[in-house]
Length: 320
Image 1: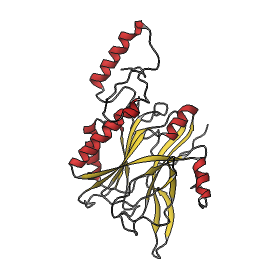
Image 2 (image 1 turned 90 degrees about the vertical axis):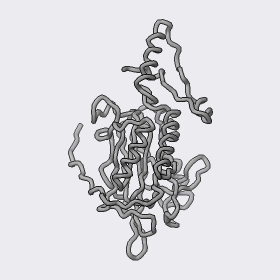
Image 3 (image 1 turned 180 degrees about the vertical axis):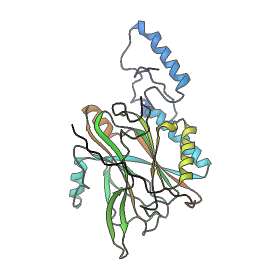
Image 4 (image 1 turned 120 degrees about the horizontal axis):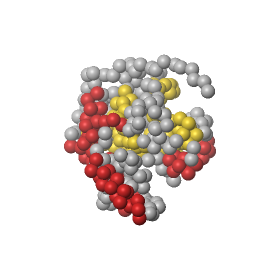
């Protein structure tokens, strides 16, 4: 069904009136002759899209799904912390330099990086000199890398960027502690980046570049197969299709998990380059349409069936 962009099916949720006030339910009045067609399309969306609209999830629906997901995970023995995406911009680089930093984390002005800002859990060791980022209007310094248990999962639930030259989602082994107790920065990717050519998305066909923008997406990073399954089940129960879920595996062949100081640190970067529409660019970078979750079992689970080191895609030469 081809649904009109302005004909959205909203879930009204108590306590989020501030968000409701930001949303225009109808941007333009249609001519009377087209109203019946529009209403029919809306009814079709209500019947067949469930809480999913034909344009994807709205901000309201994403909040509703998040609450249902957290509730489902809590009921099955998991704690869930909520995080957010922080896009590191030129202005933040200046703050970093003023505060005594010696660089801008290799940030590219034309393709700013989105960093995962996650809650710290009980028992997690944080290095005193751990790199931090000036997050939010008050520029609160937040840690951008974490140690995780082998039974945790980090979930990105949001939208892909507006039309752009490229975007990608990558998870990294950030730092490793050497035998002498010193940290060394590795910044090695743990798998190929998830990008428009390989993401699971709701689009015309898999790998369609043109049909990969402004799409709902879920990315689940975890070392544990059973935890991935539990997350997948809870998301489906909350109304998210498995067709848009993607795995970022964390293999013991590459990463030393654990909360103690000897464990590796994990970081995530979402990159987008050259968003075509400046207004959409500002909206996307300043208020990313996404939610992060850190899922931790209340009773620690052993990793009995670990993921193997991912096979990398062959290198190819692309010419214009």
